[in-house]
Image (cartoon, rainbow over all chains, first blue to last red; front, side, top):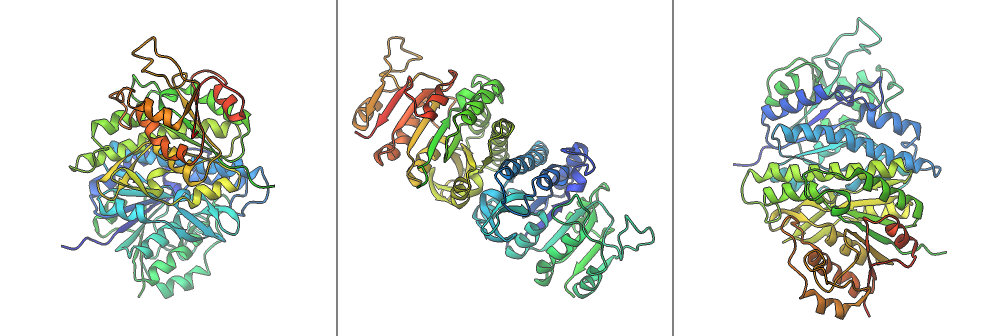
Length: 266
Length: 266
């Protein structure tokens, strides 16, 4: 029997943290989602989470994404990475507590970007952990950059890169809205949710969507969509679900029909 | 002006944790040592710490060092790595709080061993962080192993490997005793501390030293010494100091004469 192809699950920083605060973890959501992951028992699962109110405010304060320009940014880089490991630690703690053999893989320890794009990803550990039946967990992080000195690597770029690189079966994007809308649902109450999109429909929609909200240095929904295109082009379907609603991530992981937006190549 | 060669500082798990407990961090010692590191202002410093009462009890319980033998060890591996990241997080928090641009590099994310010995170490991030003026911090960890499936990598093996690989200026070993003795000072009160040793004297002494204490899966003082030999053979001096005594690590970092044992090739 051949191994099932990997599933990549993104957990948005807006689900597991309160983005209006600073270092404000939603531990109940972390507990609920890790229990859903445990219960779904998906083989070959990779989890990637965002930074929410941990990584973003510090990264913004020190302009980490723009690269190294002055000495004082260094402590900002150190702090950005450190707070991300703290958020990651909360998730790892919950996963291990639920009996999931999850192992955190630190992006800044094995990835170097070039002008913000992943240039060198030493993914040997990731592949081996996966093959042995562990659940690898990664996250958006402050990383070294061959051109900029350092920058911010978004969880979304990581999702797309890993899914495309490992030829994933599917991507599940857990976000804090019900799916993709034909307009920004937070600004326009008549915006309609789109249950299914092809890649060409997505590209048409893309130009209509709002700019990223200002406190997300890795881009909001527009950034997410743009990042996922390389994976979708490889034929990997993307299921967007509202991870703040109980059991939607569980159902998506189980492959059940679920409210949200499914994006497919054709 | 050429860059100074790196200094590798080991902080023993027995200093920053209470080895008689479980998950018992000595936060005051962590605060004191990180302040000493900050005050010493050493360029090109790499810090490596041990597991103490975090990594060792869990690793022992699940026999992680012996390699993968049964499914239930997987959660033990996950737990061992996780508790090490928690201990590391306490140190990183204190370093950042003291204004040190320290960045943790996760051993299990970039190192694969073979029969317990480092086989593949993707050290590009380590080198770049060092070159940019960051303080890289690593630690003993549960890692993947090409033969055993997984195992425990000691902080001491990491010290020796990194010092030899980066052609370090010196190694400073912060331990919980005053230096190397001609017998086990905890068992024999007439044991004498040796202020200076050559490599050949060390090898003679080695056979006389006691076996590692049972709750240190990576070996006690005997393990430490054996691990350091490859670095000493490359001409890298090793200064052993009592890290539980205030300012000894600071003085050693500053290159001041300090109570302890200095081991040199000749």
